[in-house]
Length: 268
Length: 241
Image 1 (cartoon, chains in turn red, purple):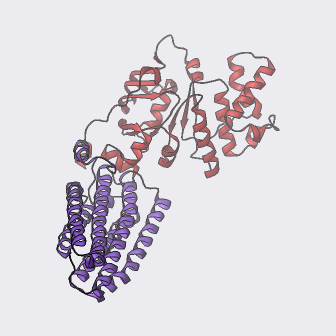
Image 2: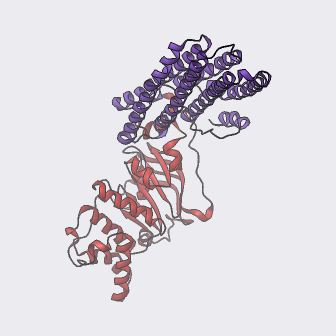
Image 3: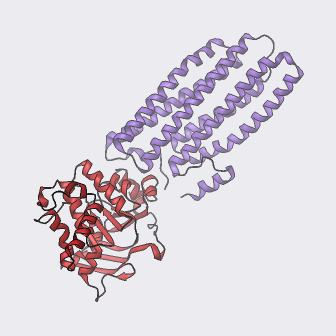
């Protein structure tokens, strides 16, 4: 028990400046007096899938939500340290938070389509952002639905309610809605945990394909899913970064005892 | 990060602990049987015991059956548990090890077959001293490789890897002296050829023991030293935390 608590500090994974999309420096966050993240430092590479794994309450979702400042809505959340998106401090005073959230899109565990048609769901963000000629908007909507691997399934019923779609389709619709505003980063918080195995595989396939277009960060409890889709895996425990490395290495030969115990299902 | 021999018994799922323990136990049982096969095959030759040689050939089926059984158990663990990290390395090491053990079983069978053909021939058989010597050497390698596997002992495994080179040297020099016998006395060619096959089989047993030792290093340290130059291996193993 004691041995693993004392084992050496987590190796720091760094990427050349040109490949860094997000970088977190000594970032801590507490809800009131309860610390959730403790001086984390890590970098997320561009156009790769990075997975955060760890037990419930380890801070992985908190970290994910910090990337688009969702904690701004929670008054008890206090943070310290720095997070940069493409070299720019996301907490800078002159930063436009709506623009940040356009650039850093988020998909949650339960699909949350708006109570409107499939078409209007995808058009929603676009309409908020700017006025576009209908043809141009239609093109973007088709592109977003195609990118989310949903177009063929919905092209004949674009104006029907989004709630008629299955859970898996709804989740892909939500991804299409996020993609329509052309984000740089897509954050996925347990995107497939409410879905059946086939829908899950479709989402995973989508994640792999999307990395050509943008940077993806995935939080998952499903370790096989992290192993299947991610390029890099970070293991967090009690608000600390325990290990961060290439997924292949983390799942075949982790460097730290705590990671080994977690991914192999041992008592920790 | 190194693991120890009780690493695989600490899962939250006791059933999983048990499955991995069984894999190790069955592999050790197969190792024990194969070790006995080599010992008996050599004994049958040196003591001219045809009954024992026949028994070795019959027992090869048991070795094959064990390989099938353990492979099936490994497949089941992979399919049902999707093991990761040291668990995954254990299953892979066991799959690889069964294949080498089965080949050692085949070599024992070859030795027994040649022992039978020699027992039919008249006249003195040359080269038995070399057989005795090399067989003792490779049997020790095999025993040590299996012990290293059971104890997750990479130091012992590395010793086996180093031993393999000297077995290769001994094999080379034994072959040269057997060639001389054949040149000196053409009537001995048939029996000397049998001895050469036996020595070849023993040398292969050494190679397989060496492979087993390499799997131990992979299992414990996550380091694949197959195909590495011998002088680099120790350096790699020491460097790896």
